[in-house]
Length: 340
Image 1 (cartoon, rainbow, N blue to C red):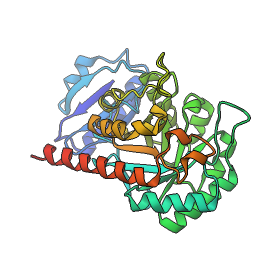
Image 2: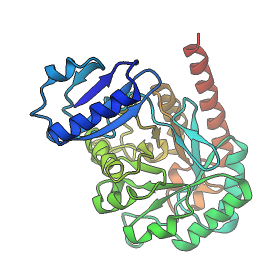
Image 3: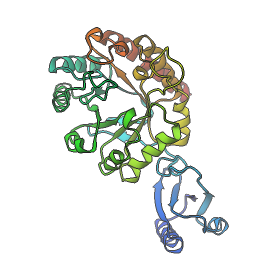
């Protein structure tokens, strides 16, 4: 249940009302204070609460029951967009466009530092790179692991770009203490024990949609993280598995406006994994921006033909430069039209 309070409600009235709800009904009350209104989110058994009685209170503007099982990730509880701020001041979800770019796998110091310099020069604000790589085949390259993390940090030191990289298991959390954004991959989206532990951190979490997961399942996974106390969640649409085999996955761009309507969390799109073809990355990136995405995560490699993983979907630095210019240009145009 959510209760929207009137703008003139004082802090004393708010505290008194919260205490009354807790003592009378035994529910937990979360408070979200926005610019124009204050929203109370009641979590627990609300069946015994008399809505008419609540509506009759002088400070109450509106009361609604929430049917969705996700509460903290729900826009009804948190009407205003969540903005994730990194340690360097970069904001994700504030209306600007954030691009995360880099190789699927970190392969060497020279490789990751060169790509980091190139993508930064083209406008990327965050460096992506896989240190731990979950692969379909046990014989495929599995990543440099801890060494890969060190190389990402080396590239960050050289370029100043924050880093985002994927975690595989709970026991690795301490190794990710100095990572700016922890990525939970599609295969781990419903690794609930991992999500619970990440909820105890304050790190921004990039949560990718599972290969065959529904939008509600994605939001419920975000709820696991947020229920643990970490509200810094970024949702990522990276394509789902359908009957179509021409592309690696089917990039569900309709998920962007759907997620934006259901949740207050930022939404980014991965057109590289979503299509599996470098030739489709630009058009899908443009479409994602037009659909309202807060950011993109794009794979870039300085020699895709020799990449140790996912070379077919990786852009060259020159191709990425062209895509970055195109999407930033589109974003600036859309913002100018919205401000008219």
